[in-house]
Image (cartoon, rainbow over all chains, first blue to last red):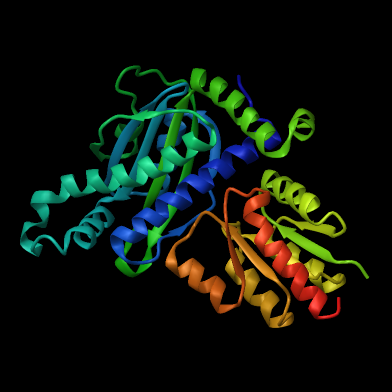
Length: 211
Length: 127
């Protein structure tokens, strides 16, 4: 099994941290209120374990915007909300353009568009720092429990994935959720190489060689 | 007495990058490192620090909280908060305690302005 060594793990968390911080800046512009972020968590686990982790934290139904990314490595990025938080967010983002009674009509579109902006900023800045080009699929709305979120559309195996997640909250608007990323193992091998290249670029070969 | 700069980041990689950039820009300065706000406060309790550069998003107390505590104890210490999180509230929080805002990712260029400004302030203060 592929392991992430100390500095690789550190570099990957730092990449995610920068990507998510930029995404939070974008989200803040949309909602007009501060978006707070947790420190990213990163683990290698099975999809089932990732599902369990989210379900243990959230006992209500979830709504998520999901986008698959592809390039030298691939995986899925998700913006996940408890159902009521998703609705609060839609109300905040869309309140200027539409009346309260009509919110339901545009809930999915608004969530998809918000997710698209946040996830693109996050994946885009990570890809830039790794000097890679990644393409994102169109946003897809998934509803249900943790399980449906992490099921891969193409391959339904339960292999080990790299699971990254971060909590975010917009306290004054009662919105909270997660940004999560899943990557399969063949991708992880490539990612590991790219992360090492990234480390070498920013700190020089002598340090990354010793890591 | 020479100048001592404190680097605070939970990421070892980020500390290495900061440390290298500082070593290039201010080779004479002594560096001390901390991995959290609490560690950083413990360091200033036991030794003298002239300049501090720190991350915003850290486990436990964040960089703004560290900035506030340092500012209370050291009214003129040059402080820089390093983050990609350029939300208005974070920038305002840094300004409120007179800390400089440096955006991630870090390199020599992004740090140059803060470090030369800090060196100037320390010299004019007779350090």
